[in-house]
Length: 285
Image 1: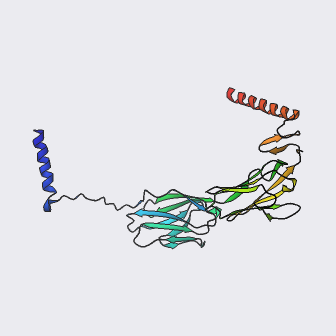
Image 2 (image 1 turned 120 degrees about the vertical axis):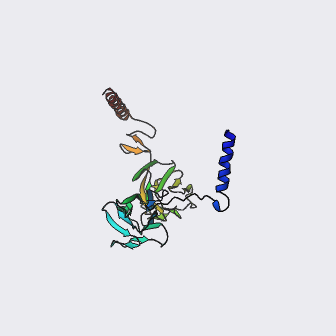
Image 3 (image 1 turned 180 degrees about the horizontal axis):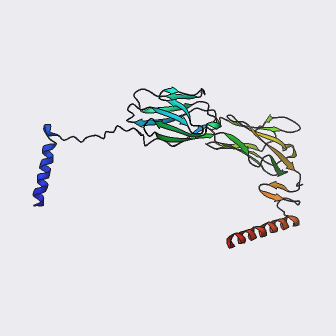
């Protein structure tokens, strides 16, 4: 009985899908506009560069699409028209497409924030996009002052953050009482000087100088090709240590490198005991 029923069903389907009696499945039709589900809610731009925020709307009908700036609710664009005196903003839309673009030229830090793509429905439909603005910056670890002992290895590490692309080059300069902003040579008679560069979204340049000399003291400048330079003052010491000098994260109070004086030990023990008391009081409460 079940087999006969299945045969009847199959026969009916075959009749409906053959010849002029083909059964066509209706496509999904809606008169309500909706945002493309693949739109991005977060965008990143670099200072001074151009960025574009895209809004894709399906079944737009006779509605309009606008871009609104969240921090002051200013209308920036409506359709293909721009409604702001800031010439950095521009509306882009090609007739017959479902994409409305807000272009921002020469992005500035103040441009960071929420931008809403709005459809003129009732109530209004809105899709927020957060624009994060990155400002390239550089730093030399340990700046503004680094202390090393004579005859030790000097390692100056320059880190370049949030770059739109890696720098073409990174130059190092040295200034002391004998010369000013001298381009560091890696093949000079001094010898033992080398540089390593690791390029990427975060680029790092290492300036390595073997057997530190007193003449190596001075101001070192890390100068990438695409952002402002940064500086550090290097002090090469001849066995002496300034009071409470910090080197490589360790506080040295008097004494020689690698040694800890009596007062320093007392300070360390008092600090550890205080932390223990705070930890105990926190857990008791």
